[in-house]
Length: 173
Image 1 (spheres, rainbow, N blue to C red):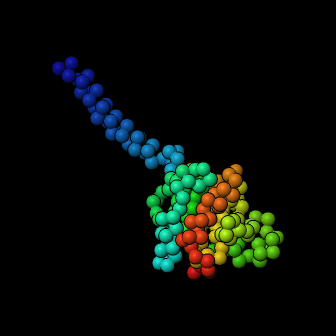
Image 2 (spheres, rainbow, N blue to C red):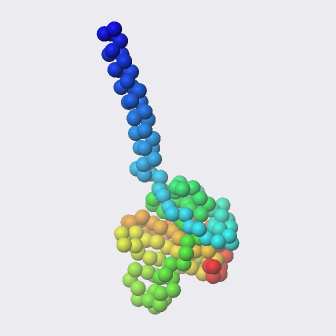
Image 3 (tube, helix red, strand yellow):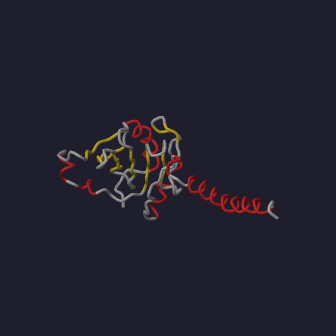
């Protein structure tokens, strides 16, 4: 009987240890340290959603040399390249700075309007030093965020053909 007790204790440890190990592995697998970016999914109306779905179909597989890896949760309204390096969200609301007279006058140090390859963008410097770009003069607002320290001009050049193809010129509703 004495030889049975150590085996029973070992079996109990394994019974407790295996589920705990599985739980730890599952939690680690869901961690953001695995390079999966996250992005809030916009909730535009039906017309804009269709335009954004059309954009998703023509987005490039590489942007600024980075491979496409979409953020979580999966959606046709979001896309990503290089983990958190470049995140696109389609169907976002109009940024308040887009109608700010200081931006139009060029007197806002944190927001600048400009164009890249036929697509007009509003560039906004974020509090953390990263940049956010939002299309202007298109029937849907497309937002592109670039992580801090990243030269995002290549991303805008790479994304311009898809935006021009899928999102017609006009005023977003």
